[in-house]
Image (cartoon, rainbow, N blue to C red; front, side):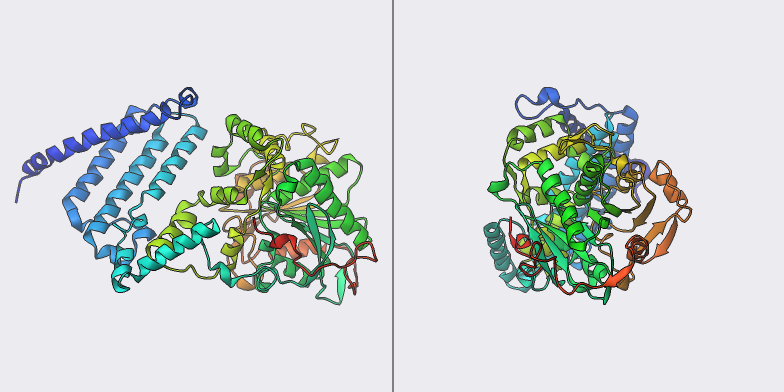
Length: 568
């Protein structure tokens, strides 16, 4: 057996090469702070690194690279589901490539975290590295993907032919298939809760749903979903439909179905969405229900729109809401999570120049942005499955909805970016004028049920919780497990996940303080919310026999209506 000294001498050339390569890698990484498009160099940050952090990264890299070198083709990638298949373990070349890739990925992420710069720049560096590493994974290329190679051999090349067909199909349809879209049709097997359109204008259709109980609560219930998605995320299938659940609980339910804007709405502003959509929907439901007070719910951007509308009405002396429910909603945009990396003055000014006075943000642009927040799950996973392996993704209602993009009017979008994400003016009393009124969310003095999802990457849990500090009425905050969609769409019958409630009702300034006194409860938060809402819904009255009200709001086309069926 060789002595330790002999082994060290034998490894010295390799260690020297690694050290030289390390230096070149550092130079390349530092160049991110000085190189860029012509004219942009002066705006990019200069990166520096603490010698101690670099030394630690270098030593770790050399040690782990040395281990890989000694293992050679016997090296196995660490736990990563992209390389977990049996084929990777039986293909030495692919397995070694994956192990080297994972080492490089860890090291580059270490570089990003070690940069001596502000937190936002560090987050942008990390995001850029994550995107690059996700794109360069050996699993994305037929030359290294052991599973795709095995599939090609087993099918005698048929999987490759199917992959090419899938690619051509997706190019033709203009987006990558995440599910078998031919398996779904809006109104046939998604968005099937029975109802009718009782009002419509240029911006939305108002849907009323058929009661499923002999009696209903006297106060109608209006849901305002996000306009950046289709409303039927709240009505995918009967067993996971929040809309149907509310109907089953004895509420007279109305839902805003946003129009998918075309070029005729290229000049539409935030004020129009508030006045002609949210406020109009509130007043219409009041008229149809014959009730001065209604219960309202806003989801995501729908919650931001709804709260703005309630603040406008409060400034006019109106308090139409008996209660308000906000699901994964941002009102205070101090904590916007990963989305913050996209927002700064140059970016917002560019969007204002591009479409602030008129134009359209294509739905697929927004959908792509959200997909690349989770690139391995929502992008490269389908590249590998659809194109390298020639698979047809299975039918999945949630992913069908996710692919059903919506456009946004440019002026609406530009206003939203500047006044919320960039300048956070909505949270500042009287800093904004909307529909001719100074906005103060503190004037919304009604009971509020505020829900946030613990793993939400669109509306971070701290951002959702911050609404408790802005509204004036008695508030109840509940945190659910999982993310932006799965946390919300969690019917009780599934008996999945958990939710957290603080029994003492205290709402300290920070979410972490609230959580310290919260208790975990198994299952869906829907039952807790249903009990809370019942307390604000008024007495029970006989369920209406017809939709709408008289000739003014008579039933039109059947739910889900025509607006939701328009593709971007």
